[in-house]
Length: 319
Ligand SMILES: [Zn+2]
Image (cartoon, rainbow, N blue to C red; front, side, top):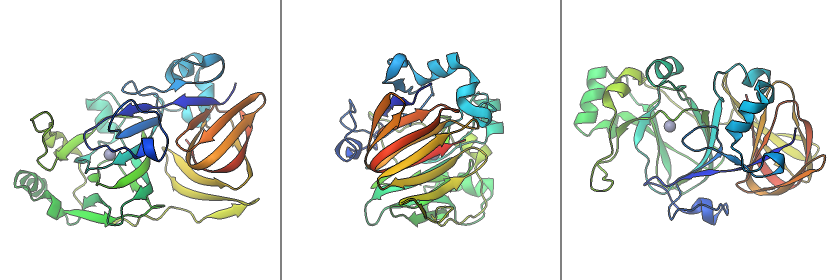
């Protein structure tokens, strides 16, 4: 069992930019890169392993062969690989959208629903997101707002800054708006119901909307949000760790390594490490892997301790 360096899958959606290439040095094949899927077993964008005896194979293929032990006792309780982690560069606004719950998605889409968390890495000064509705709406009012083009009057627009964390439960209407670079940890699902797309055209046509399904799943009660990570920064051995978010689906910390740190993959869960700033090197036995900004390493459950040297900030995700 060794740590696995993952090659991301890229997406060139119409709203993407070039910061993942320029700021993260990622090797995207596209002019505009909207998303890099840095931990993915999803058939829409599989990660390929870059090191060791598994080099060239997809992570999902290897996990299938190695059995559920590599997912850990928590991870193996899910019937599919549980999470998908992306870096997202929104040069333009994403559509206003909503994701279904597990119950609805498993019944209607044969996938998990999607609860997601956004960690803001970088953004323009005036950048904002759309998060939930700002008043209680009936289904009829929601439908009318979509049809009359007044939906944006009924949503919360929340200013964001680097370090903010937004937890988006399934059913919450949301959009990442222009000028935001973020990391997203989400359930392993690609089910999105698009509600409003600013009247944009792609190849001369509007993109499809999914209004009926959105009416089924959207939470139409007014909600608030703060953008505060769940925990306070805690310093230990010169390194700083912050609990960003935690739910029954995933737990995400930010770990700032000043010089040296140990990360442990115990029997309960695999560990995903995604470098979001700085540069480091990870060592486990004979395996030595770089952890440059944008790089992603998967530690199988039960791997034990790995050592990280360098000055690097990591998103550490477990289930
Ligand atoms: Zn979403």
